Amino acid sequence: MLQISDLHARYDGKDILTGVSLSIKPGEVHAIMGPNGAGKSTLGYVLSGRPQYEVTSGQVQLAGQDLLALEPEQRVAAGLFLAFQYPVEIPGVSTMNFLRTAVNAVRKARGQAEHDAPSFLRLVREKAKALGISEEMLKRPLNVGFSGGEKKRMETLQMLLLEPKLAVLDETDSGLDIDALKVVAQGVNSLRGSERSLLVITHYQRLLDYIKPDFVHVLSAGRIVKSGGPELALELEAKGYSHVA
Amino acid sequence: MSPEGWPSNTLEAYRYTDLSKIGALELPDGSIQCTGSLPADILTQAGRYTLEHFIPAARCASARYLRVARGVEVTLVETLTSAAPGVGAARQKLVIELEDGARLTHLRRQQLETSAFHWGETKITVARDASYTYMALNSGAALARQDLEITLAALGAQAAVYALQLLSEDQQGDLTTVIEHQAPQTTSDQLIKNVLTGRARGVYQGRIRVAPGAQKTNGQQQSRALLLSPQAEMNTKPELEIFADDVSCSHGAAVGALDEQVLYYLRARGLSCPQARSLLIGAFVDEILEKIAAPDVQSAWQREAQTWLQQHA
Ligand SMILES: Nc1ncnc2c1ncn2[C@@H]1O[C@H](COP(=O)(O)OP(=O)(O)O)[C@@H](O)[C@H]1O
Ligand SMILES: [Mg+2]
Image (cartoon, rainbow over all chains, first blue to last red; front, side, top):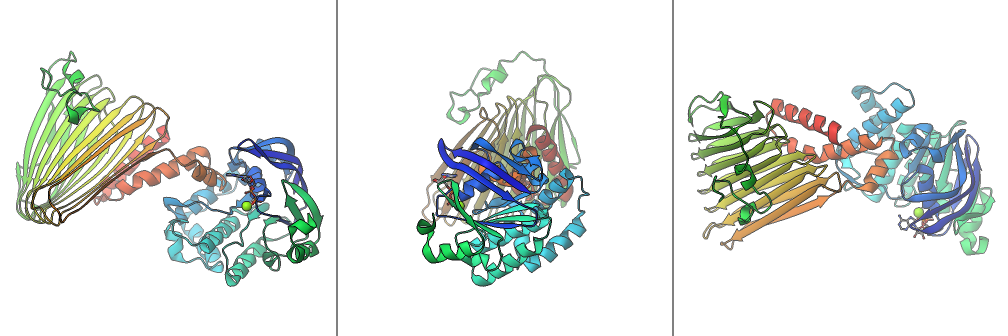
């Protein structure tokens, strides 16, 4: 599904990713853990094509496509989704209007029929309800005045609506209490299937109790320094990154 | 004043907008054709009226007086349209008096050819408990200046000014307001938005004057401009002259480009660059357009703003 080969990237003149290689097969869940500043968010931004994050060498393939040759919106159409660590607030744009514009843009780019207003409303209400997102939140401007936890639920809702092949979740667990974490994890798990893959970036073992990874990687100073099974996350929790990396 | 009666930028109030060059233009003389549904100069019947100015490619001027009778509620839809292409210079004056308790919503659409020069002066006197709301959509003219002078003359008088300018290429649009709070418990609220691209220049000068003794007045003023190109420019000059002590007045101004982080976020959700830009600019202009109470005017202006966005966003 996703094939990252020797990826180097810089931001603001500074080398941040210094040779990341990673292969994710359809249906697999991979977790990336690592200390603050290791480059985890940068990896997500580079995959999604954020301007100013410059790839200096390496390749990325998503479902056989050269991801790095695509514009950010083309990557979404190709099946990539990034749930942001810090979702932005957009005053004046109602959440519902934003969701509809995004989903229909992506459906159109994928050659699928666009939703009409009533059927889209039904779809959003159903998925929002399962994530504990109120009707009132959907009417408000996107993320404006939302709590940290509400923003993460909203990211999860967008992921479910955009039906990615590969979703990158960047610290989607931060800012969530344990109940909210379970709800979000349930939402993420509802997306899992043999044709979809997940790359879960997290600081804590906690999330991985609910979204069970097949593989765990440790990213440190812009490289993957160790890979293993789920037990690696427990080891990191017990001993800390410095010990492992 | 220049010999022809057009002010130059040596006068402080015309610093950003030199009109004397209009006076110097070699143009034939012509006249503004005014049509519409106004039955008389004094409006005693509630309802909606239109006032349409068709402006020729000539030097021309018009003046009009209107009075809204006591307690009468009126909507006035005013449009300024070019009667013919080519350079024209029009000076247009409208004087309005609102009697006690009268309410006027004034919707003004300036959609002149981009070769036109225009200077509009609107003077309004608002009597006790009367209320005046001015809403404007300006997208035309090479150079347009609208002077809006509102006098809140008696207790409880209210005024609101909500204007949107959409300007491109070498257009210049100037909105200059003077709001005189002459009596206690008068209120004014202004929100001015400019979307500027190309080398367009927006000007907003807003003066709020609170006379001695005009206690418990409230005067608010906000100017927001969105610059879509590096050469576009916004000049904002707020002036508060307050001679009473128990008042609440404030002003604010913001000028900026579209937020790159927000644009990226939208693209990371599948919107193309133009889609992301027009969603954000649409939200910016909607804050003005959603204040229009007349649904047909609102949807017409929304359509026109949308068309402008498609061409310029
Ligand atoms: N937008 C940004 N602004 C400033 N520094 C950045 C930005 N993106 C990445 N960096 C730099 O890149 C490095 C890695 O950051 P990041 O990818 O956010 O790490 P992590 O997500 O693992 O905590 C840090 O040294 C950080 O300073
Ligand atoms: Mg991070």
